[in-house]
Image (tube, rainbow, N blue to C red):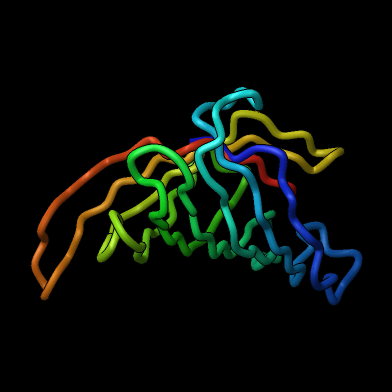
Length: 155
């Protein structure tokens, strides 16, 4: 899956406008998800949530995101990701902390990889891959890996 053409909103400005990492800045996102990194790829969902600049040393975010799937076999399902996202790392790993419908009881991780980053326009195309196990009553009931849609993120 790829995230593309972000619709993020700048919510809270940083307390220190000279911070090289914009520490303290809060953004809210509602970004389209597509099958692949090409912006003309088939839409399959939305990446909705927030991220805040939480690192004073390098650019990094605490990201809370629901991957809301709206097409295909997982239509109506949601995967919830919560974790640290340092965009300068080639691959970022964030915990999958739950989900709904087909992803109910999901626990695992999502990996994000940037395909494209426009630092001037603050736009990006990011691929997400998701690996999880379903846990019920303290026992693993299944394990799955998915290539999630791509998403565009405005930083």
